[in-house]
Image 1: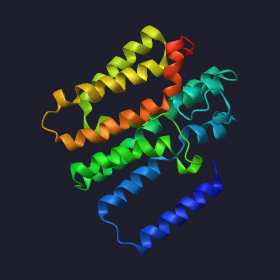
Image 2: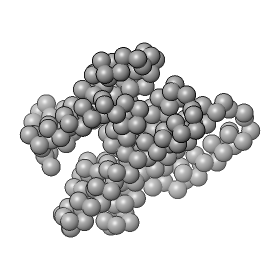
Image 3: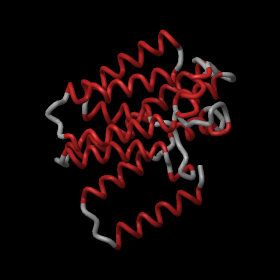
Image 4: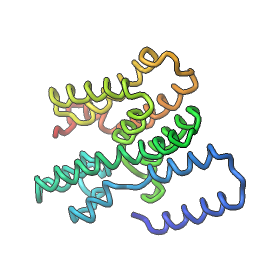
Length: 223
């Protein structure tokens, strides 16, 4: 984790937030982005697995690569740390939205927070604006905002993962179908609120671009 980037990020952010009077919505976006940026997979891999997950396997900080990075030395610990990573990556997307929802923040800002939470995970300022692929954090934010679509996505994720053992294919299928069925399951949501979902979908597919090519070529690794 880059200490220089971390210090610069907080110095610039603190200066901007204290000298300029931003609307409350922008402050919510900043909080969601910052919490989403916490690289739990990287930290847990270093603290409890003794590995730098950015230098192992795919170099991703998500739960799958954390599991793969630690599996060779301790399969049991790998499952535990990978599971905790998955949980924390989901919660860092969900928690800020839950708090904001409890405080009465409007739906439009909540959807914006969802996007910025995922963007923070995928482009973390604490890792030189690199990061994970956004699946768990996307699941966290969608689980709060559109739980029925989230459950559809989770069901498909589990089905595809069980039948193919491709984590990337399962994740993309679950998130993609969840986004497709969203307008049918939640027709009362304004069209503007679908935009953050499709932006999240774009980011996740972009971060999986190498996985997609490996799937096409039949070179993607199974779990």
